[in-house]
Each structure stands twice: as C-alpha cells, then as structure tokens.
Length: 376
Image 1 (spheres, rainbow, N blue to C red):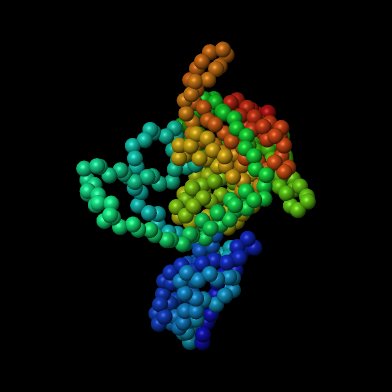
Image 2: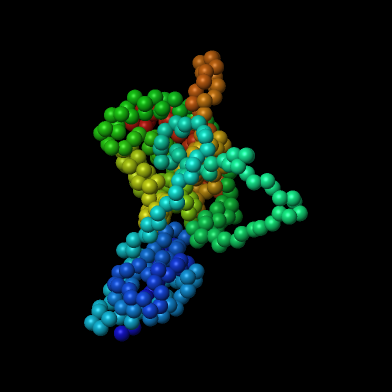
C-alpha cells in the first residue's frame, strides 16, 4: 500500500516553506514518526515525519523545493498491516533542534555590565590572526577574485520583506532621550543575591524596561495601537515583543500580558527565549502578534540607532549601550552610567507629543524604579 508523505498544515501567516535535505533516500527503510526531511518556514523549522513504516518508494519534491501545505512530498510502500499515522497539525509538530556552531574565540573587550540574555551578543567575533602568521600576499595581478552566492534563508527573506514593508507603509519618525541607569543598577546590586536565591534567575535589566514600557503604554494608549484600513485598533492588553538575535537572524518572541507578569516571570521567560532562539525551538504561537517591541542594539556596542517598526505595531523602543558619561546633577558635573533610548513610531497615528511623553514616562520610571512597584 502506498502512503503519501505530505507537507503539514501551516498557520495563516505562513503560506509556504522550503525543503531542506532529505534524511532518507529512495529504497531505504523508514519507520513511522521518523523524521524524513525538515521544512524551513520564515519563522521556524518543522519536521516532516513518516506517516507509516515501510520503504521510501519515491521522492516527489527535491531538496530546496518550495512547497505549500498539503503537497505530496514522497511515497512510502507501507508494510502489510501497517496503519498510517493521522496527519499532524502544525501546532503538534516539534521544531527541529539544530546544534549550535562551535563558539569562536572572542576578541579582547571590556567586561559586560551583566550576563543578561538580551544584553549580551549571541556568539562572538573570530579571533584576529597575528600578522606574522599571515602568508605573504601574491602580486595584485595574480590574486584570484572570488565571490560566493548563498540563497538567503526564508527567515532572512521574511525579515527583509517586513522591514521594507514598514518603511513603505508607515510614516516612521524617531525621538530620543537618555536614562540614568544608576538607580536601577543600585537596586539590582542590593537585591540580586536574594532575588536569585528566591526565584532561581538573575534580576536583569529587561524586566525593568518591560515594566516601564507597560506602565507608559497605559498612559499613552495610542503607542500601543495599530492601523487596520481606516480604523484605529486600540489594544487593551500588553503583548511585548522582545527582539532576540539568533544564528538564523532576528526573531521576536512575545511576552503575553506582560503587565501582569512579575519581575521573576519576565526574567525567566526572556532567558528561555534566548536559549531556544538558537536551537530553533521557538514556536509560531510564541512569535505571532505583539502590540509593541523592545530591541536592544547595545549588546553589540551601539550607542545610538533608529529601530524599525515591526508591522502592524506603531512603536518600537531601542535600547543602547550603558556607558559612563559626565552629566549635570544638582549644579555639579558627575559621572553616571547613561543609556540612550530611541522610540521609533508611526507618525500617522502618533503625534510628537505622545511619542515624547511616552519615552519620558519610561525614563522617569527607570530613574525612580520604586514607581514601577507602586505603579505611579
């Protein structure tokens, strides 16, 4: 009996996927639920399993093919009496776990402020090669001029599409401010040991920023709204996207109802997102939706940038490197750990007053973190 191997059902936001390498060849024995090939979508990688035990009779879609949900990929000559497995929904499919590449030797650099998953770069640049180890360069006329062409991953293609979509559709504008991080850093230092002992996770910066963002969004709901046709959609919930750099590209898992999460809950969820981003274990449900995004370019040493919106959201907060700088405080010049922050927003629905006020709300909350606990 011939059994069809089909592309699994995909979510509404995913129209197709690309087949990676077949793990079995025609004529080989396969067992029910054994992974035959991986399907790369623009968000996750899914496993396509054998629906029955038997011999792989024919491969109908070669590696690299673009396929849609329900397409027949291969045929299995099932063993007599072997029942085909029921077709699995996309939600039941486990993402592929791909071992991360070996960690390269990092360049010498100043120690980071804190090993926070979203305040540290993923991976590190390769070690420099000593000049004396380099072979002599051939004469210019003997050098081979080479170039390589590599097909972009579907995730990278999707990132490019969405970023261009944001630039083409939204009237993006960015406003800036700076935050004195000393109060937060002192609070963290005071309670870090007790927090870790009590909750099993370190108290990072992101929980403070997430709480400050949620509090300011409640005061300025337009920043949490979006446009659908000729309507403004106000979201009375706070699903905060947290940009995470992975080996495949930038992914933005969502902290659902972030305003109701404790500091410990936020730190645990963000730590989990960071770990699973590289192993490709994040699910579609974890990355869809979101009403506002926080992106941290400071992990790579950025002092200032203009983040791009994540459509259809109307606001994104960019965080940057914490750096000691001289500032005026009570008529005196003092050194404080300062961070530039940037809010990019859709000027079609958010005026400068709301944008500047929202960002000032985030600043005020972080410079007096007791306000986050008292919701002031």
